[in-house]
Image (cartoon, rainbow, N blue to C red; front, side):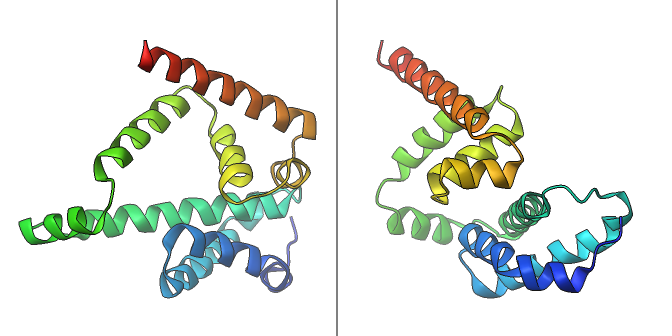
Length: 162
């Protein structure tokens, strides 16, 4: 595939940067993640297809950002002071554990693309049509995945309260 990295950078750079800053909450780290995303694109360009470059870059930016977060968390030393600071600065620490556990169970058996669809639609605020365009699915396909995910979440919630 013959892609022009400069053109991709100009066209999709803002999308990639927004995704990185959304996940990393740090402009400097987001800039690094954006650069790494395009570097990864350059390294893999011989294996790439030209279909849906925005979806590919969105996914790559997400993966790079999540890897940066994992790396950052593994390097942090959790002394008693830093743990206490985290707890003190967090209003509902226990609630976040419950939500995290629920989401892990919800997405455990789902395709990775379903998680990406949910993030794009519910967190990033993309419409069904925008989400469909970014993922290469039809609007009805996106709608069906989100509907099934909502039904699964409702069932899990009912089981938790039973």
